[in-house]
Image (cartoon, rainbow, N blue to C red; front, side, top):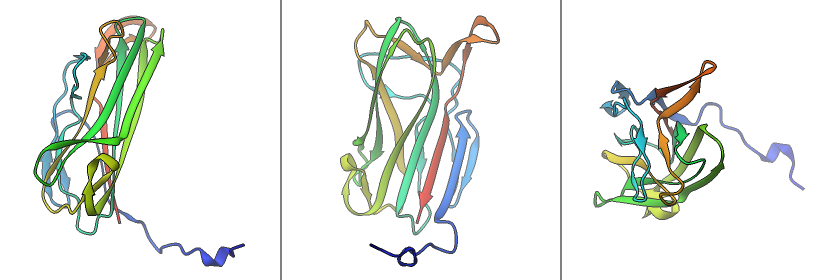
Length: 187
């Protein structure tokens, strides 16, 4: 059995950069320069084909010394059909500049008669080593790469809309929302 003294803790934070924003078109300052994020002003219907989740796309370069990266999307969605099924993946540019699906980020849901919902999805990546984006390894990363989430519905009998709510303040009234996105770079 190990002694507690065998486990070493660092003397400070291992977070190199923490960025969090509403997808409202603002410009955020990163350690590698300013980035303007997408501006979401309306809801989007899910389809049976994967599409970029509105507000999730960013061109990002992590700080020097980054070993791990977490990319989080928090969003609201509204049912169209009483039951809805959604599928999501995070995508990252590979070293050739082609958006590549991270299989490890795969998420699906089935909502049975849930109308307004809040979801939080995370993708975690290792930075450095041999690139294998499908398995969460980005490889060397020294210039801007695109990160984004993509989504679709199961089929046209399980429809939903993202960035939208209906039941607000004790009444039924549609409201569009923007996702909250978070990037955390670790050493």
